Image (cartoon, rainbow over all chains, first blue to last red; front, side, top):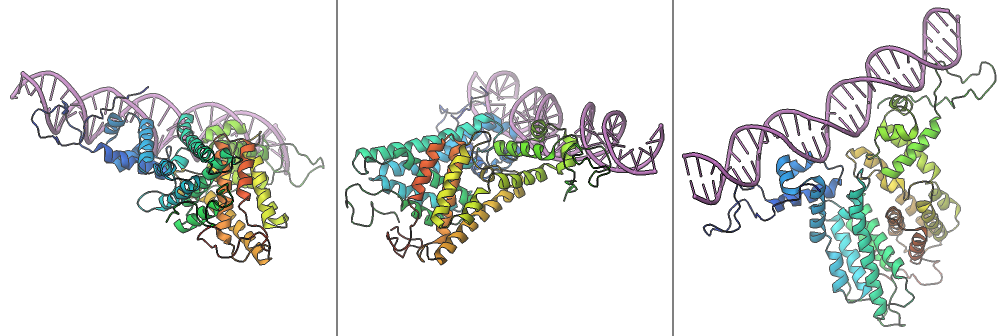
Amino acid sequence: MGNSREKELRSGPAPAAGQGRSVGRPRGRPRSFDREAALEKAVLAFWERGYEATSVADLTQVMGIGAPSLYAAFGDKRSLFEEAVGVYCDRYGSFVERALAEEPTVRGAFRRILGEAADLYTAAGHPHGCLVIHAATNCTTREVEELLRVRRNEDVAAFESRVRAGVAAGELDSGADARALARYAHAIIQGMSQQARDGASRGELEALADMAMANWPRVRAEDGYSAGESSGDVR
Amino acid sequence: MGNSREKELRSGPAPAAGQGRSVGRPRGRPRSFDREAALEKAVLAFWERGYEATSVADLTQVMGIGAPSLYAAFGDKRSLFEEAVGVYCDRYGSFVERALAEEPTVRGAFRRILGEAADLYTAAGHPHGCLVIHAATNCTTREVEELLRVRRNEDVAAFESRVRAGVAAGELDSGADARALARYAHAIIQGMSQQARDGASRGELEALADMAMANWPRVRAEDGYSAGESSGDVR
DNA sequence: TCTTTTCTCTAGCACCCGCTATAAAATCCG
DNA sequence: CGGATTTTATAGCGGGTGCTAGAGAAAAGA
């Protein structure tokens, strides 16, 4: 399965630990670049152009290293992509599970998710839209497509189970269609991501998110919430 | 602009018109394949794998012709793609403008659009999802991406103007945010298309469409949707 | 029949793809 | 210092890409 020894043990180019014969210091010539920094550049490249349209030549250029260094440090292009996807999810995509876990109500969680997505997908400093949604469409390699498809479907499943938890907690009517609600929320996110790529502004995405939330079911009892807000309103 | 003489005049391989020295009969060796049938095969290939992932070798195979014939009949790969996009829009995507034009109410138009999209995006006999949404993402050639991006944004604009017409006709409250409604509808369609590609069934897409329509503003007289939401709070 | 016109087939062009063999450079250990 | 070990840069591999030259094949017109 390819060259999977990645020697992640080594930290930076400098010894870092001044202590004499330190334990972690490897034998040969030390790596001349910062592996994490280079990886982050790869994330941005894949985010912008997707897996196939980003050539190894592109990668070596933005990462500032030669091809042999790339292959020695990351295995092959696909392994690098997988690792980049992991970094993306940790660094940029984690807001979703955080909102699902932290917000006390389902409605509040999704309101927060959509609001933060509007920000992230149009923020300066990195490409627009969502890497997981766009970076592996139309690939010649089926497995790469599957890589992100699995993540997307996992997100839908996480949405659904959060909704179910809300129903179980009595927050939502027991007739609520958890699966449809999850798909609905995910569709909105996908639409926001695509429209961000097509040039929509943050304000436009926020208006879209507000409109989508207007459809979200409220508390089941006649008026558990005073005619206005769900949870501690975002923004 | 490449080789744009495409000799579309010739019809089929057979003379068709038995009439003696018919006018339309060209001079040289007649084309041995049905241009329209080959074009339709190209549509399906691009629909399934997208522009870049569909190689000319793939195309010649599914179209059943050699590369020189392809180039003589369609120009180059990109021209063939443009033509294929046109065929797709005529044959498969026209339901949108038809619904916008035929349905008497805005709400009815979008309900019909979402319903028919659920059918089309999961129908057997052709790839799932929407070609315009997916076939030109992550392209190395910027112009190809732009080709479909323009069509998508045209769709949003068409949605918006239909909503505005509904407002002008008194069907919707004058405070309705036409732009946000258009973006909302388009986001749902994009989400449906992607989820169809990710394996969602027709029933799941229909449930998604129903849920999306539950949010659509009703006639202004009854059922609230009180004025005052351009982009701010919901309801 | 012969010429002209057009299409089709074989073969191959130049280029880019992901990837790597090789050897020089940089570090550690003794 | 001299090996040992690992990373680096140069250069290039085999293969796929979009595309086309050149020769032959099939029609019309003479």
